[in-house]
Image (cartoon, rainbow, N blue to C red; front, top):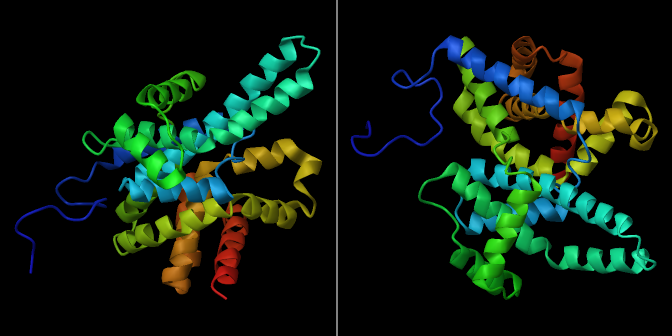
Length: 302
């Protein structure tokens, strides 16, 4: 029976009442591609803090806070970017201090960074909650209770606020970068617009599960990808390695194809070609990363 009250489960793909036009979809894709190109050009050391235990802690925290999926992945992106820049800033400060005890000073700072990891991660969750919702935000009091009850850390409300401000200042308030899920949902909308038979709602549900697995195994995913594609190790061509890790468009496409393979293996080649046409990413590149992702998922299910 059709639902009379309430709204359908989001996101809505190619809805006949709310779907945007092809021109707007094209503008969205161009905008995302432009942002992605800038990220690839200056990849820094991104990805170091969105893998393994870091990803698990952020995801589990967001689940306990009952945050939307977009906020969850955005929080991880913010945390990764903040930690990389935060450590670089502190290291530069120590090196420029001309202290005779810079090694001891740096070790002391590293210990402080480790002790504050969970606080910083929760601050990133707070920021992500405010960027994605007008009423499901994580207040300072909520963050304080969470850190006390689930992490065993006691912070004053002022400390919670100062940590959130530290994240914002370190990133120069540039916290609105699209997450990989944004790329995935935009590509699925375009895919559904071009191919009305594509089960984009199913692919989206599977994609979120696949993306979670990818982030938890992030370092291993790209280590394997690099070994497969260049028959070498990441350290021998670090710039190229970091650029590929920073490519959200490639990751989004590969996650979707992996999800299609899981949902209906017979359609994966067709969807790969369609997404290659949409993004101009070579099919071989998509297949390489997709193969690594699917292999890791299969190994995890044994």
